Length: 376
Image (tube, rainbow, N blue to C red; front, side, top):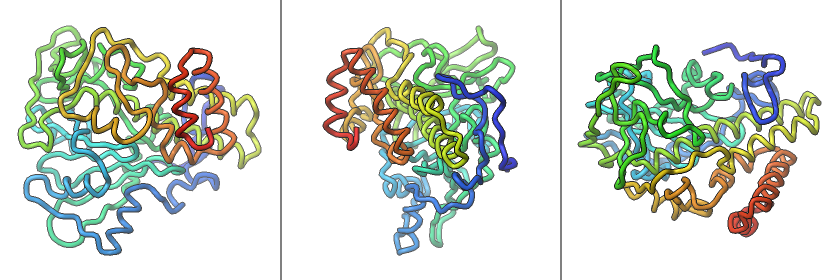
């Protein structure tokens, strides 16, 4: 694990561009990442296990189906990467892709034949907490916290806080990362032509030009990779789920970072009106899908993810004709992480969102927020 004290470079924090690492330390009294009791979805599940809940093991997928059900993660969320970019990379490849399942606060990774399930769960205040669940049958299955994951999951690429990594890479036929060709940090702002390198992508419509479903001999010399997910819980790696995942991973990191920055600054009596506005503006801009590329043609998924996703609450209906979502504000505004932001920051973000939606004529989105988001 890296040392806890992480200092930000002078001038690295600027309006509209959160860069660098967190300006305090993981164990600062305002944060206490490694020592404060957590209350994320996995911690709550562990308490249920202590009270007698038993996860069922099945031979083909181990505890995966039971864990997804216990955490309310839909099977339709399955996406799959064949790039060797995990600590279990020796098992991952085009013939044994790593399946990922997610909801608004938890991500579960499953590799066929692996000794454990990988789990990342968002604590409303602490940020992403990492766990593992042994895939050995017998005994009481309980998830174990793994702070050693911060070796990779705390960096500039996670906005300097413990968080999620999502990259598009150039894999060869074995799934090996060809780092000399570069890579892309992925979120909803990235052009489709640079997304999903090392990922399988499935859809009911023609796919946009991307790096998905492709092996590379060089950046310009490529051949198609055919998705084969026989034996997985779902038959595909749904394009709608991939797009939601692209947005959500950075959104998760951003909510952690601005929350930490605000709490640290308040504790140290360093919060200024300018910094509060910078944090609020950056967060509101991302929540409003700023700089999202326009879809050139309609997209439709195959797994039913879009439909099941929409049924879970407001602002979750996909568009997939010209943009990702029907309404121009992220469903993550309903997350526990957003609600756990300091009051002054949360109020400032809501004000930025309301003013922008009003100015842009997005009245339908604004009306939904006023009707469904407490305190908006």
